[in-house]
Length: 509
Image 1 (cartoon, one colour):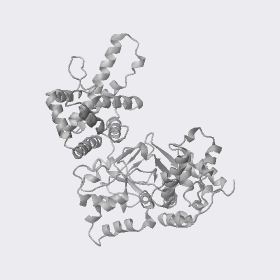
Image 2 (cartoon, helix red, strand yellow; image 1 turned 90 degrees about the horizontal axis):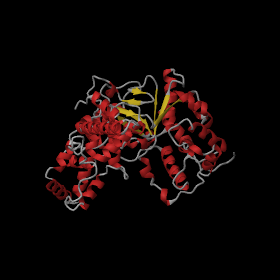
Image 3 (cartoon, rainbow, N blue to C red; image 1 turned 180 degrees about the horizontal axis):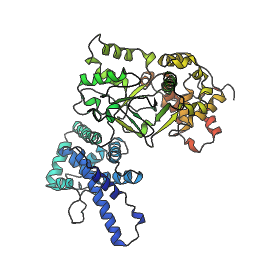
C-alpha cells in the first residue's frame, strides 16, 4: 500500500488547529471544528488503508473510533512533524497492550457482554453525524447495517468461550502490528503473527546501549538508528520482520548478522545490535577508538529507555537463536556458532536486536565516550585507562567480569563519581544509572532484599550477564524501599548519595 504523503500532511495540519486561539465568532469556531473532524476522518481512513482487517477487526475498529481520534489528536498536537503517522499508529498499538490502554480488546469484549444482544452497542463517536448528516466513517455504515443481526452475530462468536476471545484479541493486536509495519518510516517489530513458525516470548527489556562512530554500519545518530537494509533503496528487506520469514531464511539472516564484521554488513541485513551491558558497550567504544585511531570525542554511546518503545521493538538474541537453531546443518558453521552462543555463558554480553528503523527522539540520549571520561568514568574505574587493555574487546570484558566478581565494599568517592557520570545519561533517572554503573563490580549490599523483589537467578539470566542481573536485583530493592520509587530530578546530590549509601556497604566517605 502506497501512502499519499500530501494527504497525510494535510490531515495532520487539520488536526493541529489550535482551537483555543480562535476568537472570530461562533461561525469560525464551528468551521475549525468541522475541519478538525474532516482531518480526523482522513487519519482514520489512512490508518485503515495501511492494512485491511477482517470483518471482526472492522467492528472493533468502529467501536474504538472515538479513542483512536483522541489518540490521533493528542499525538499530532504534541510534535512538530507535519505527518508523524507512525507515531499515532504506534501509540494505538501501545494502547492495545497496556493494562490501562484505551484500545484494549477486553474493553470491547466486556461491552459486548453487557449490551444484551446489542441494546447498548453503539459506542460514543461511532455514529456521530458529519456536516451533511451522514455518518463520519465508512466503518460506521458497516457497523450499523442490520445492526441487531450484526450485534447478535458478534456476541454469538465471542460467547464461544475464552479461547475465541483470546484469538479475537490477538487478531486485534496483529492488525496494529501490520498497520505499523506499513507506515512510512515506521518501526518493524519482533511480533509473532498468527502464521509464525516460532514461539517467542516478548519479555520486558532493560535499558539498552549501543556504541557507534562514523564507520558503523547502518545509520546512527541522535534521532535514528537504522539497519543497512532500511536505508538502502536497492534492498527489499528494509521492512522485513524476521519472524515473518521462513525459518531457514530467518536463521541465515540471524547468523549473518551475529557473525558479521564490526565495520560493515550485508545489504540485506535488517538487524542492528544493542546490549543490556553498559560495561560491554563502554569497552567496545574504547576498542573502536584504538582500532580506528579515533578520538574519544568521535565515538558515541546511545542509551535507550526501552520502556518508552513499543513492545517488540527489541528482542534478545538467545530466544531467537533457540527458535531457529534446528534449521542449522549439524556440525556446520551456523550450528557451531549457535551452540557456542547458547552454551558458553562467559561470552553472553546481553545482546538485543532491533529491525529496520528505531526512532530515538524523546526516549534516548547519545553521549560521547569523551564526555563520560570527563565526568569521571576513569576515576570510577581506572581499569578502563589501561593502554594495553584498549587493544581488546570481548576478552577484556570477560577479564573485568572475573576480576570484579569478588565481593567488595564501596567508597563514598565511588558513589560521587558514579552520580557525576550518570548525569550524562539525561533520559534516565540519575540514581538508576549510578546504580547500573556501580554494579559493574560485585559490591557488598547493605539493604536486605524482600520477598517482593526476589527473582530466580535463572530468570534473570535471560536479561544478560552478571552485572545486568545485579542491576535488576538491586534496582528492584532500591525502588521497593522508596515505596513506589522516587523522582531524582529534584533531589540534591547529597540525598542521592545517601540513597545509594543505604544500598551498598560503605567503607569510607
